[in-house]
Length: 335
Image (cartoon, rainbow, N blue to C red; front, top):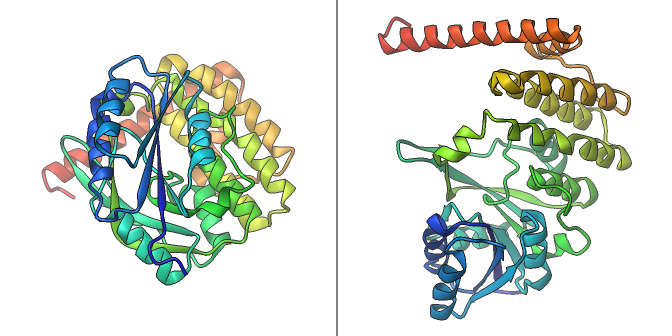
């Protein structure tokens, strides 16, 4: 039995100079020392290279790979290819890791024989900090359902993985958005794996203003690129009704979120993309929505284009007015 297993920490970075030093400091100062830190500089044009050089000169556990920009999936795959650890941990360059995180991860993995450990984390910004706990699950199937439905976050940074899970699985180099969800679904649909929850925060997920702004521009439409891939993966492994219903709920939740939040200038484009995709997915296993709001939105996008746009526009306005009213009543303690 390995008493002090090695952990490979993989950090892809592209123009992350603003926060990279904070991230690297949080990892080099971990209470658990048997780690290697693999930084993949994915074609950065800022001061990322200089920061990597400075940190690697002062800590021999840091390995730096400089490469042309090809995206986060390719960068992480390079990290997996050269990793020598018994466990794999992924961090993002603009976030940071709490000091005892890897030690807590390893203790949980060793005592429970878990191949995936899912932990608590914080969402933070300049104005707030909120702890998020994983929703409980009973087994691999229920965890897969929670990832597909969005009940549990598909991010990698609150999870520790046994390295053997990646023997035959890699990130899809052609996927640049929600690649973490695709990877998790592949692992969970193909491999029998023991998963445990660590009820201790391990990570600070930092929300900067740019990421908040991007929730409304057309970049949020990129998430729909993964759904055909996911449903084909699930169909190939003969997923049952519960799994397919969770997939369907996750799709309709994304549909609702995008149509409610995207800037009006991109709303017509969003309606077209979602209508075409829903039609395609329905032919290969997408279930009808059970949620009444999801049903209404789906019926709305099936109307003639100009009518569909006007209905959803008015629906958004009504929701925004309701939200403002509730906020007002709560502010003045009328609710």
